[in-house]
Image (cartoon, rainbow, N blue to C red; front, side):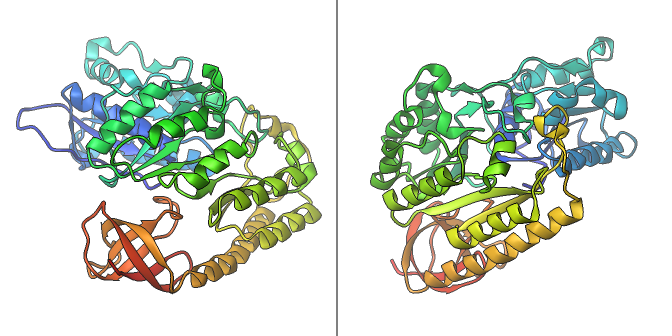
Length: 459
């Protein structure tokens, strides 16, 4: 997701202005929305002009090396506003802040404050402390994560009015060798079902048609609350929310996926027939070194079971190439599997060493250039699969959620069918017919590009 500076309506009275930059994933976006809501409720004004911001907050990402570098570059760039703009206080919040804490203050002297992932709820108080010269004793706000908002938390939503992310849990209990998320977000902590349902009801009342359920490990939702089949129970309550049309769970770990859950997907029309499940690899040795549960046999069996029990399901997955010890043979096995499995969407990440993770100490590192070549090979292969799948949809009639006028040209509308998630997948371009944003319409598909479709409204 690109960084954004957000502008709600401004008050005529003089208020301290805040510029806010969001980096990273959809979970970060929700954290940013809660911080923005807290700031506005506390009397701050937001501006989309960074030169006018007296306080600039950067919600950072620290997931992989590229994300960390983007966060650092963004901090440095906005630090210059102390000379060229109105900036008096520069704050780094989020994952990078939680990970490196005081080291950020030492390495980036332009920072005035560092706010970890457990302190988002105090952001307004922290801003006021840093703005008061006599109170500038504390510059570091770090506590044990995770911070998890509830249904009553103020929230200034970003993006489309008819689609919203809902964070159902924070943190992760897995021990994947490559992943630093538990270091930044802590152990899993799930929101109560009642809190999530209350938020969904409020969002639906505001006109939201699609909610996207996010966490680090959605299939494990509720385990910490003592719930059996917690995700199943949550979904059964959410489908009762009036006026919600699509419910889309993200980030299903490929373990503990019950037939009960899959049958709920298949039988409940509000739950999108869309599985987002990062598999990471298919080679048994790689999976073991990654500390992933299961093996090739378990993965292939699960994928087959999902496709059997949810007819017409869209399957999105992700793989890591270049993990230490990935031989040419192991990579070829992965590539062959991608070709055979014919997933609808595939993301490919290059492995990067992350401090304090088990993978850092592994031998047989893979050259960065080799990783890039391997990623390109898989993505090139996947392009052919995606094109064929798009072509196969020509002539079909699909229900499409209209997003509004296309970003490409005002002559087109833009929308998504249930197999297209917001921001990360393609779109459906509508070249004939009219409909308001947030409405669901029937569209006949007449053409297909690599990841996008073209069609016209038929009813």
